[in-house]
Image (cartoon, rainbow, N blue to C red):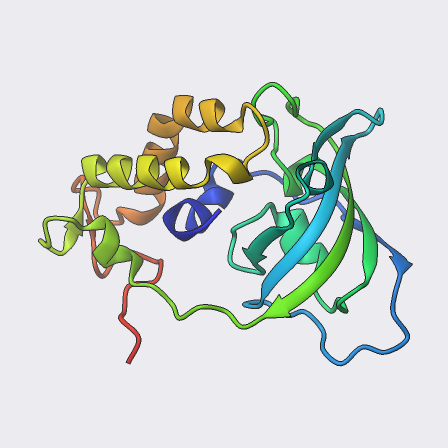
Length: 210
């Protein structure tokens, strides 16, 4: 996930962070570069519930998953558990609910409060794209403040673009919870409670690259 959805993903569930477990399954003898926050990663993964039920796998689609590490495009368990990793390395992550999908779960495939197991393999590390001015992208009328309607439009556009990258059922779940997410965004960002998020209040990327 990316842009504003990523920036506010942590607001969907605020809860105590339990311990993430990371097991090194395989590590190449030669390692020229380690993953760090901001890197673009390409990975294969398989996700299962505690009872062994598989809920998603990039291998089944024969399509690696690409994302930027450390910016909220994935669950917190991935952002924390995939740093300092070599190309070709394989790990097993045991992600508690607080670092996964929380008490709300994800669609019909990941129940609320679920501990998630991931078998991951890092395929490549690439340079991150230049930062985007997210504020400008959301502020479609250019009045230097963001309304609820503008965020709703932007979230809907981002969800549509990410259909193929979400677990089955998660799209419908996020659409259903969109109003709640917008209110949580405003509660966090609208410091003066005037019903708009100003350029000064906005905590996400808001400056064009020089």
